[in-house]
Structure formats: C-alpha cells, structure tokens
Image 1 (cartoon, rainbow, N blue to C red):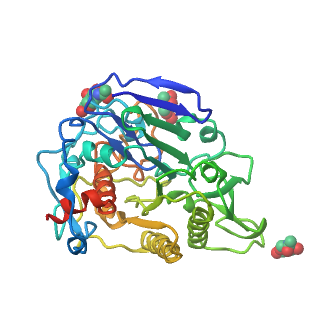
Image 2 (image 1 turned 45 degrees about the horizontal axis):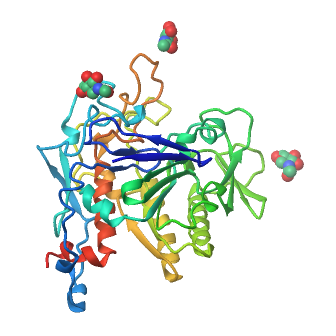
Image 3 (image 1 turned 45 degrees about the vertical axis):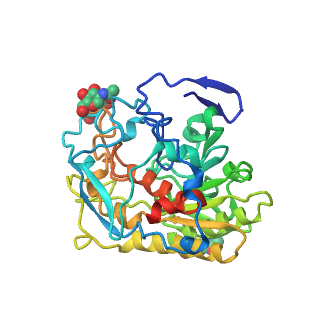
Length: 402
Ligand SMILES: *[C@@H]1O[C@H](CO)[C@@H](O)[C@H](O)[C@H]1NC(C)=O
Ligand SMILES: *[C@@H]1O[C@H](CO)[C@@H](O)[C@H](O)[C@H]1NC(C)=O
Ligand SMILES: *[C@@H]1O[C@H](CO)[C@@H](O)[C@H](O)[C@H]1NC(C)=O
C-alpha cells in the first residue's frame, strides 16, 4: 500500500513505505495516532448483510470503555517495535535511546463491563474509506519555543493520503487552539506568549471545513506564562510578572480556548464532521518540577486506589469536558469524548523520562509529558476505533455482541 504525503503547499511527494509492513504509519506529531496494516486484506470480507439489524437491537447500549483498569498483557507489545516501525520520532523512541525496562509495554486497558478490542487496522481503514480525519492540537508538547521552529517545520502540518482507501489524515499543529504570538523577543523555553482567546487559530480554521473527523486536544502549553486578550484588548495574564497586569488563572484561558474552538467549528458552514475531544494528557513529574530536576522513573501503572484525579489535571479535564458538553447542546454537530485523562493518569511508567533523546546530549530536562512508543498511548487508537464504530451502523452490532 502506498502512502502519499502532501505538504501544506499541496506539492505531492510520493512516499513509499519501504519498511516492515507492521508499521504503515505512525503519526505521532500531535496526538498520537497510528495505523498498522498487517491484516489489511485478510479480514475485509465482512458482509454488510450480516450487520443488518432491527432498530430494537440498535437501542442496546455500548459499554463504557473508559472505566476500567490496566491489566498485565504479557504478549505485548502488540503492534510494532522500534525496529519494525521506523517513523517513531526520537522524542518518543524510548527503546532507541536505551530504556532498559520493558514492562511498561505489557499492559492493556480492561474496561469493567466489556473487552476493548485490539486495534484492527482493516476495520479502521474500512471505516474511513473515502473519508478524512484531522488532528488539531499540540504535540502533547513541552513548553518549547513556539515561534520559528514549528511554524516553519512542515512536519507539523502534514497531510497523508492513502490512495487505496481514498483516506486523508492531516495534522494542524495548534497548541492553544486559538491565535497566539510571541510577547517577548527572547524565544526561551519559558517565553511569554500572547493568546487571543476569542480568535481561533488560522492554522486550522481555514483547513478543517471538509473533514469528516476532527480530533481536538490541548494541554501542557497552558502552563506557560501567557497574556490573555479578548476583542484584541489585554484582559490579564498568567504568571507573566508584569506590573499592574491582572492575574488570570490558566484555567480561564483553557476554557475560553476550547469554547472558541468548538464555537468556531459550529460556525463553519460546510463543516459537518464528528468532533472528538481527546482529553487532557497528564504529566508525571515526581521529585521536583519539570525544570527543577523532576523525573518519572516508575516502572508500573498505578491502580485507581493509588492515584486519583486532582489539581490541575482535574481542573483542565473538567473544564474541557464542560465545554464539549456545552457545544454538544447546540445540536448541529456531533461531539464525542475520548475520555483518556484518568486512564493516562494511571501510567506514570509510560513517559520517556531521560530516554527521549540521545544520552550523549546533555539532558537538562526529563520528559514526563510525552509518551514512549510503543507504549500506553497505543490504547488511544483502540479507543478511537471503538468510538468510531459505535457511530457507524454497520459496526455497532459487533460491539454489542449481537
Ligand atoms: C531499537 O531498540 C533496541 C534496544 O531495545 C536498540 O538496540 C536498537 O538500536 C533500536 N533500533 C532502532 C532502529 O532504533
Ligand atoms: C503601575 O503601578 C505603578 C506603581 O505600582 C504605577 O506607578 C504606575 O502608574 C502603574 N501603571 C499603570 C499603567 O497603571
Ligand atoms: C555536556 O556538559 C559538559 C559539562 O557541562 C560539557 O563539558 C560537555 O561538553 C557537554 N556535552 C555536550 C555534548 O554538549
């Protein structure tokens, strides 16, 4: 199967995947999203007639896949390795950089009421045949310089087209969802940024209208020093250290960014897609803050007794879910939740820590924000596929076991 990559310029560059076919595509730039096509043609013989059902059966509820626990999965890692998949970004490539323990790959999410099926690439590709999917958001990113590095790097704005399925997947890198700019000249790790809370980021607004699925996420960037604007006027700031400027909580900025993003989607005349919110992805720094030597050295998941949602994670999570629910009430569009915050909170063992870069570099900051690949976020694909199937008549029955 061929994957064509089209950059923003729409210059078509054929990009043949010459590597092991276990790994068709790992799009890990913003939200992780991976498709593997081991069985593509084997299991496509599903007969739609088998899936015809009466409306009474359709009333059957699908299971709450987001309530459950991590259970040992000794057969893991199930999908790929750093050898079979060569498109893992260094930042996530913990095995390449010598992470010694492997147990973190050997867990699977077990919902209380049912089984969460493994990611089935054939089913996925069948579902998205002729469709398009866009990711809007951050890279589950570090507080890094926003200015040049990303806006000029076409990796952050890529489209891939799978000709065999006429399936387009695109990334629109937009860590705040709303318009932002540098507020000071020093592009330091913790530089001050302007955030225009009532203006959606052009990086995605002008692109997203014709997509069938849009997956929105945002998080860690809101911890930075930020100056908030509404109607182009400064309304205050978050840890900006500027005299006389009103202090405004980051939660306010976070709420308004999601509100603006969802309202903007609703206002786009031609947008008829399903919008997914992939909820806040928590960091796991222990023994200090991220810039004060904090690290994440655990080797096993928490149980839900050991770790509860609280603090910033709780606040960010409930804020964005409230905004999604409010958007849903407007009625015109479908909004769906990929409710992974609490699930990921239980995985302090899944971050790169110091194995997200070459050991020969002088590591100044451990990475307890991004996630190792393979790793716990491979489950995000399983959740996404499950939720997409509940939305699709043809597949609903396979989930409810009828
Ligand atoms: C994959 O990881 C192993 C260690 O588990 C390492 O020896 C090898 O060089 C890595 N390969 C690539 C291509 O990164
Ligand atoms: C800011 O505060 C200082 C003293 O704290 C005052 O002298 C100055 O006029 C204030 N500036 C503005 C724009 O309010
Ligand atoms: C790492 O830091 C040490 C001491 O600060 C320095 O001597 C060395 O050159 C640095 N190495 C790299 C690759 O930057």
